[in-house]
Amino acid sequence: MDLIRVFFTLWFTLILLNHNFGNVEGRYHHHTKQKKVSTAPNDSSDSPSVPSDPSASPPSNSPSPSNSPSVPSDPYPNDNQTSSSDCVFDVRSFGAVGDGCADDTRAFRAAWKAACAVDSGIVLAPENYSFKITSTIFSGPCKPGLVFQVDGTLMAPDGPNSWPEADSRNQWLVFYRLDQMTLNGTGTIEGNGDKWWDLPCKPHRGPNGKTLSGPCGSPAMIRFFMSSNLKVKGLKIQNSPQFHMIFNGCQGVLIDKLSISSPKLSPNTDGIHVENSKYVGIYNSMISNGDDCISIGPGSSNVDIAGLTCGPSHGISIGSLGVHNSQACVSNLTVRDSIIRESDNGLRIKTWQGGMGSVSSLRFENIQMENVGNCIIIDQYYCLSKECLNQTSAVHVNDVSYSNIKGTYDVRTAPIHFACSDTVACTNITLSEVELLPFEGALLDDPFCWNAYGTQETLTIPPINCLREGDPETVGDLSEYQCS
Image (cartoon, rainbow, N blue to C red):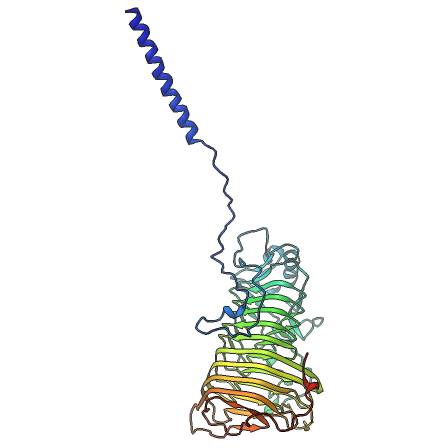
């Protein structure tokens, strides 16, 4: 019996030991140290990046032209994410009131200075607030990836009498010497331009419709100067005292999904003006105003415009060029897949007599016209008064194509108008599938041509028999008109 008792005791002890060992293994199994997982997001799918070529951004129903500009890729693909408080500088934290009455200029300047000093800094004007600021230059250089985000309303002073005497009357908001900077948001930038438009020195604003003499300077609303790799997206920009947006001396500009508006009779309120800039893409935007939707000034090249709805307005203009006998050069511009409606002009090239330089390699493709005057116009006799005299030199217009331009025109003006210089003819004009019918009234079948040479690849409607084939019989030395 003693042996049996000893054996049973040993067997029971072994069972207990085995059970406890199993529990220990279980505890270790459930508390094994896990690998550390980074909380930083690896997927930026919520904020699509901008492709390296902005011509990929327009509507996908049209192919991108082979000569479309290459704009640097988006250096800040997550510009809509403002969750990191380390890089977001809310202007209210710098003293902005946002009631539409207080002057918040100092707060915006302080927020800009702070954001400028860090990578991917964000100046935030939050929604549900209205911020009034006076004329300001937001200058760089700044750290890359700077974002100026307007989700509320940004307002200019209310007219000339409210404009501080010490401030420039030529401009309101200026962005200067910047690289990799974005201006975006879901808000509105309000120019309060109506009192500027009513100055008696503005066209037809004096008594009895006559312009009166007097101080007439009015501020451009937003100006980018000497900057590169810019993006402007999503904003509503309205009622500028003069031009809404100017890009001067810039390289690499992407403009997308803007709404720009001012009344039809507001003077000199161009939507977007590009000058001395290259590699500019303007896409998917709506512009209605009292002057050109888009104007292209001298020194501009590699400009791509697509998905634009333009009008009421003065249309899309290249020029005016060559004023005061200056040299003007514009090259490699494409306008495609766009609508122009209720506008005084459609696709216009305008130059002054006496200028030099050239306008070359322009492509106008897939444009719908709706009740437009001067749908297609080249005017080398542009003049703002009746005192302009004929001059021998001119900006040479060469290699311009119009393809699939269709719609309706205002019968008060010729739908096609080529008025070229007596001494420097327009050359290599190409028309294909141009079909323009009267919006109302009878078909106007006498398009105007003067010293214009080119080719009709298909018959136009209305017929254009005045375009000369081939090249001019006598061509002078055009070397002085060429641009490097």
